[in-house]
Picture 1 (cartoon, rainbow, N blue to C red):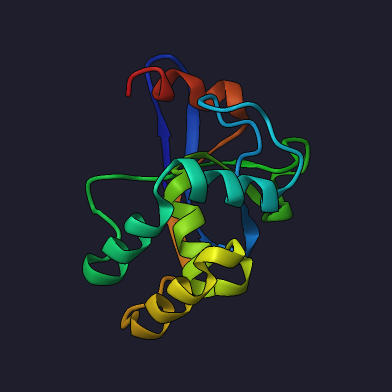
Picture 2 (cartoon, rainbow, N blue to C red; picture 1 turned 90 degrees about the vertical axis):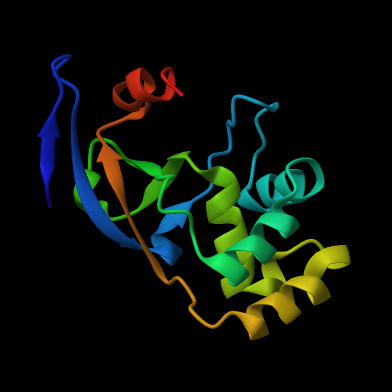
Length: 144
């Protein structure tokens, strides 16, 4: 894992994480918080055009110009290996639905099944910066 230390002393490390160990943020700043990942998927699909994004990922892959950011699910046990998305909720949602179309809202399930079958280069893990907690990533999120 590569470490970086910015002048503000915000540390992060880079990790490759299986998609199944990455969970959607339930408190996306653009929306009211939700209670479950299923609710987050429903909201993202309804309000954030996840299906067209998934179609684009199938055609072109993930953009090399856009990175994800992750924070440990339990900041006291960062080595647990499970993470929340701090940046990239839509992209992770699209990937999750491509890998497992059964997670998609019923009205979109068949579409995600077709996309999944056409996906020549499935993504099963993500390489991303991992920050110690939400406060540590905030300095970078505020810049975008």
